Image (tube, rainbow, N blue to C red; front, side, top):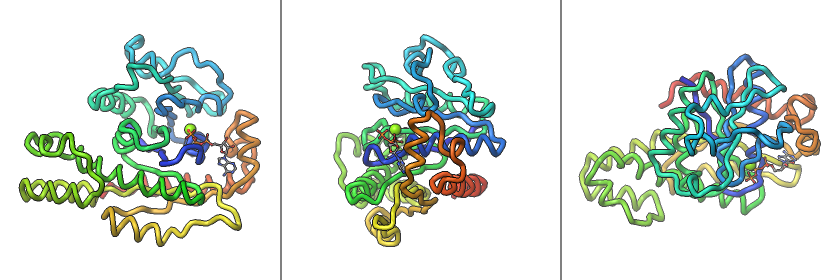
Length: 296
Ligand SMILES: Nc1ncnc2c1ncn2[C@@H]1O[C@H](COP(=O)(O)OP(=O)(O)OP(=O)(O)O)[C@@H](O)[C@H]1O
Ligand SMILES: [Mg+2]
């Protein structure tokens, strides 16, 4: 069974796709069999980072059942024999209204691929698509830049992901699911309160869902002037969300990243000594360490 790592962000354009592409290649270079899956519904573009302009088959073909097996759309990438790509889908009606069960089916197929690791690039924002794909992974990585709007969007994203995680933990519990559906929750506390009113066991389920939520953070595009007070952010998240956030690593703002995008190759391959590439290598190591720890 493959380990799934999801990469998401509250704000768009913060570097998710380049980070996903580089981490996938780094893990492949370390001997893992890696699949990079583009689940950015509507904004799929990872194939372009590898110079593949028009993939012959995409996720749309799988979702519309034109092909039965996910392997049939997976594409070998010349950059490394251990790396394959599942090109993403355009926004079609079939994908826009994908129900929860269909998303689960897709994740199940990803888990059953002949890979050690599947890195999933997820569209920006807090749509149900983004939150569900983010949460269905084994390890969750959020990306933000020091831009204040990105930090605010990160906070919102983690908060809504935590709420969604708690709500999803009730999907199997009929009465609770009824009590919670069709309600718009603004805070984790509010969900816990409603859960607690129903029965004590429900509150325990909710609290466990929160306690076991350990998203990791990558800060991208840091420069001398632009930094993030990670300690303050962690405190805010613990206080209002009850979850924890681990800083996986920081990547400097580096023109080598843009050169690599224009050259259709990940920076870790094209300019491995560039500051951003060195930072990405450290993040890949940190991720491997994290993957080796049993989930708590
Ligand atoms: N550390 C960095 N230094 C310099 N430029 C960077 C860095 N990280 C990302 N970029 C630039 O930012 C651009 C956007 O990155 P990317 O497409 O990966 O963002 P994204 O979060 O996937 O966007 P979207 O939300 O639209 O999917 C890239 O083309 C790249 O040139
Ligand atoms: Mg992207």
